[in-house]
Amino acid sequence: MKKAQFLKASILAITLTFFLSCGKEELAPIDNRIVGEWTIYSFTDEANATIIWDELETSLVDIIPEYSCFSYTLSVNAKLATERFVNVDVESRGCLSPSLTIFTWAIDPETDLYDFTQGALFITNLVTYSNNDNRMKWTNQKSGEVKIWDRTVAEISSE
Image (tube, rainbow, N blue to C red; front, top):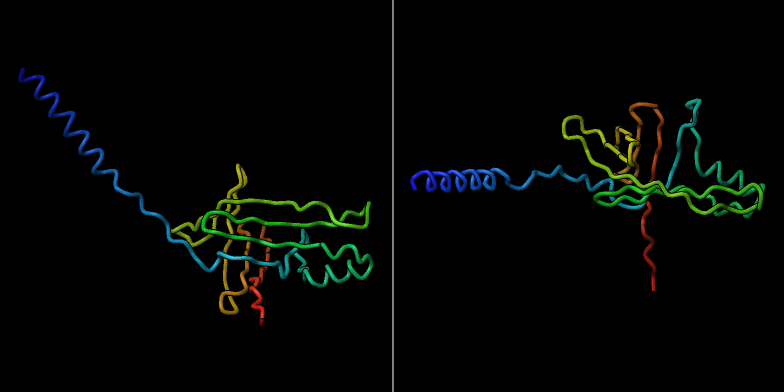
């Protein structure tokens, strides 16, 4: 009888210890500066040359006006970053369907680097802000690639 009571008390103590030690996991703080809609300003190519997006787009549209749909944007919420790229279709003088690349993201609390993950693809960027947090620079810590994004500001209609 004493053995059964001891066993019940032990199970109860272990259960209580387990549940009390499983408090809420501390979540990493979200850097709200990254959240929003962004358009690409510039990026580096394989030779590490800087390409200004508007100059590239203008030169293509000057040649073929149907290429005006050419775009590269980024949308970020608290958990996901979605890159949307619309490339030109050289066969039809128009644009291809949008290509979406969706990453989960988090800030490494030890390094303050941003980790972007898509399946087995893992990208670490140093992210810096300027222009009152309306310009964002990503520097890929492995490849050295740089992307500069400008925040899309919603236009306010005057009615």
